[in-house]
Length: 104
Image (cartoon, rainbow, N blue to C red; front, side, top):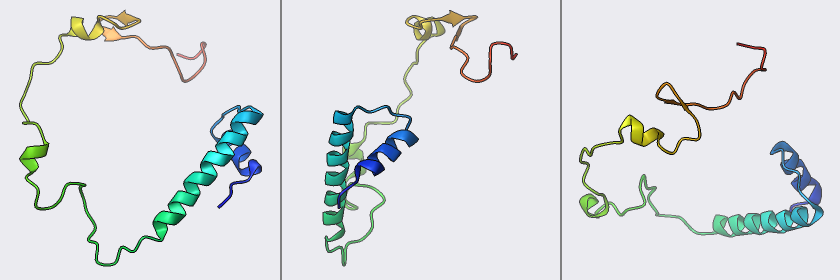
């Protein structure tokens, strides 16, 4: 399945991406290859294959794959804020992302 340049441009616009002509051509090729691979996967015979909730086999020992669930000490407030670009009153300070400067 081939993805058209117009489709790539539309997807880029929806994602607010400003792609160069070279990037558009590469994305067109990459997306086409992904869709071709998905089409190949659709051809796999799954008859008799049970759906799985987890990747591990049902008869596998779950303890062998997972670490023990043990409480461990966390960071102190000072440690957590040590590398923060900005901190105020013991909290992370982040720039405003919604609303204008005149809004409170």
